[in-house]
Length: 404
Image (cartoon, rainbow, N blue to C red; front, side, top):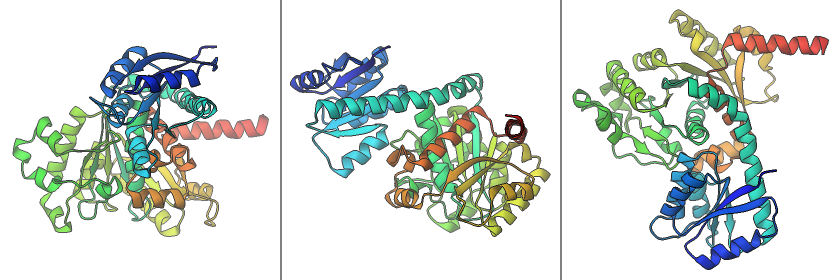
C-alpha cells in the first residue's frame, strides 16, 4: 500500500524536525519534502505533488494563507492542514477560505497529528474518487460553460446556491470561475461573499464602448476562494442604466476568459435575464416545496419551452425535506419534469453562513448541505441532469425494484 506523501512547511527548522519526529512511527506516512516559506512551498508542491501539506501561517517571503490559496488553485487534489499557534476564529476563517481542509493549533500530539492527516487524506480520496468520471468528461468539454441560476419566485435560495456553486467549482476543478450578479436592483452576491466593491456593473457599462478582456478583468472583484465577482449596482435606480445588449457583450467577454460563468438572477423574465438564459448552457431552476413556488415553476417551464430553452433546464430542489406536507414526487408529476438535484434544509448552517459572509462550502465542508452542493457541482461539470438521463435512471431504478 502506497504511503501518504507529506510536505512540511515552516520557517523554523526545529519545528519541522519536531513534526517529523511526531510522524516517525507512522508507517503509512512519508515526509517527501520541507519548505521554509510559502513561496518555496508552492514550488515544491508543484514538483513533489504531495497528498498532504502541513502549512504554518506566519512565514517570511510568503505567508501560509497566501501559499495555501495558490496551492489550492494549482493542486486541488492536495489536502492542506494549517499549523499555527494562533487559535483565533479569524485565522481559522482565513485558512478555510484559502482552501485549507483542517486547522491545528500548536502544540499538538503525535496521535492528533496522525489522526488529522489520515482524516484529510481519506476525505480527499473519497472526493477525488467521485470526481474522476466528472473530470474525464470535463477534459472533453473544452468550451466555457454559462450556468444561470433562476426562479420566478423570490426567497428560494438562488443567491445562496449560486455563490456556493461558484466556490465549489473552483475548489473541485481548479479552473477559472466568474460570478455575475444580474439582480440589478437588489443583488446580494457581494454581501453573501463579504466583499466591498468599489466599482460595479453600473460603472462598467459606462465604458462599454472600450470594453475588452483586460478592462473587464479590472472590474472583477477577487474573492479568497478564487472566484471573480462582477457585482450588481449599489442602488436600485441604477438598474435602468444597464441594457440587454450590454449584458450580452459582457457575457461574451467572460466566456473568452473564464471556464465557468455563474449568473445569479432576479425572479423575473426581463430583457437582461432573457439574454442570460439564451447564452446559458445550463439553467438551474430553483424549486421549493410550497404552492406559490410550485405554481411559478410550472409557469416558468411553459415560458422556457416557448423560448426553446427547456432542454437546458435542471430543476434543483432547495431546502429538501419531508416536513412540508408536499412530496417532491407529487410535484414532479404535477410539473411533468424530474428533479435533477436536492439541496437539504439546514437553516443553522446556511443562516450562519449568510450572516458571516462565508459560503458554507468553505465554513462547513463536511455538512450535508455542502455535500449536496458538491454533487450539484459534479452534475454541472459533466453536463448531466437532463430529463432524458433522469428518465433512464428512474426506469432502471424501477426495474431494479421490480426484479432485483
